[in-house]
Length: 221
Image (tube, rainbow, N blue to C red; front, side, top):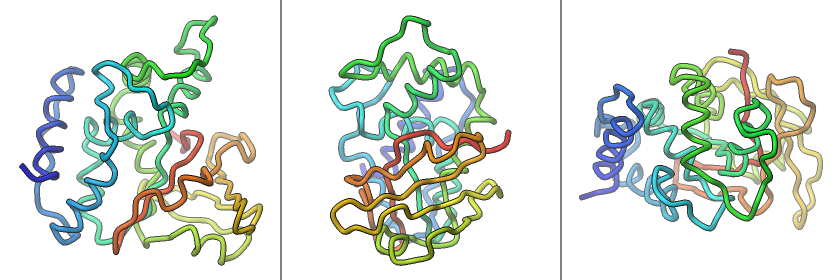
């Protein structure tokens, strides 16, 4: 089974597990089929299903991958011929759940993330529609923008994301060894979101690129 079909099946099984109505994403894509499969294979290379036992890596992209599938946001990605995706790591979603008051007041951040618990609490609190808007706010649909493009571009720019809202991008350091890119979302917390240095261009194909980020970007909902 190719990667696209495997993820379509996973999306359906995940929706059923969380009690969500969702049909599998269509196989057609604006990207060539081989590039679609390459992108998905890279994104899910270390994928661990959050509805199962937690893995040992709180800084991979299990929760955001699951969220993209259960909300159907993968259909939007499949319809684009090029895009840039800012992907929050699993710890970022745990931090969001804590900030939203969804975790026990005595919750402490540990070596791993309880991915299943965090995923279920965020889905239950926000609902699929709101989560879909949050996810689309992480997608820049107009171009593939690599780390080199950002670091070599203007100090500050505003991108129109897939949900129609603006995201600010600030280059704080152009150092080749310690590049620093901050993202200005709509939550009013200044410079709390950043691209993780080791996760710049973490996934890249001819027409797509993914940058790992430290926080979940929040639009106006």
